[in-house]
Length: 419
Image (tube, rainbow, N blue to C red; front, side, top):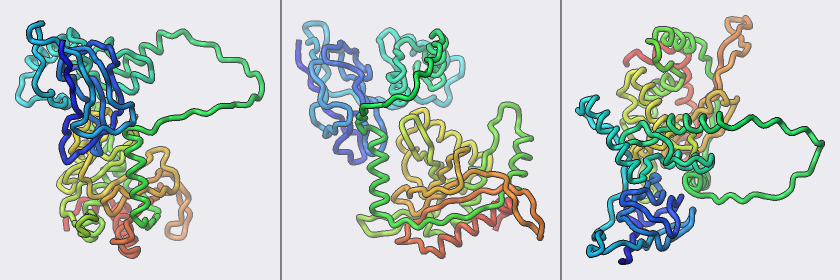
């Protein structure tokens, strides 16, 4: 036997340390080469770490929430030597990347290879799943080794997990509700360690509020005509197609408006004390996920037609929710839209996604009584609650930008007229 030390790998982009989010093995476990042993997180993304060798775990460094420097000891294995039937590798295996479809592979051949890969993965005890799925499985007490994955290389998708979760729920006999026993005191506390995405969110939100003087501006928008157009377009969709929401219309209008307000489509580089104005609009879409709030990015939204923009918003949002968004899909936005959907309320105070200059908050669209042409009538109204970096965007310019956006949304045909 020989002792094999696996060190925290270099995860790129100048990373000097990473947070241990979860261990998938314990001291004494026998693991296979390429089996996922841990989930770690950098400032950019969560990463699954595979085992570089087959062997028994002797020690682990760090508990969930602890930071481990790149190059520091992460896990120690006991492995067989070459004379004992196994050769310990000289270098760690690369960190696993999410499986992706390969262009140009015939569908039938791809299906056969995927099935073979699933079988191979099961034989070696490897489970392919996103960090979010693994966390939900731990919380639900579900062993992912027993879940059949339908994704590439047998990867367990969100739909696979939810189907398994539904099966577990259905197998449990219904429990009669407890009879009320009157009022009673609730005592005790619960401590929850802030780790992973939640820790990263907390850090970034704190830095944004501490370093950026936010200027808030709220305006109501009459979206009656926009709603009529949306319903008209949705009625013409082919069966099974996803309906259009307000977001792609707002995104399309925003790309037009920013041509006249370039200071709102910019980054502040604090180290160089430079404002970087972007010509292209890389639209951030704040998305609630099982791991917390993420901001996937629609690249060059200004170059996409309405349905293309809607499809891309849907694609990156779903990828973020399912934990399969690539690192480059979660960075580089130049302005962000955030919406609480049906929970949108009347007014919100969104926090700027640094180093951006602005964030546009979309509140709920509701029918309200309004005065038009001297008469009271029912109109569908929506509030836009926005925040701007007051260091570089003056209040007048912020208000003017939202008024220009309001004008396009209230006359939606103008969104699509060039010039």
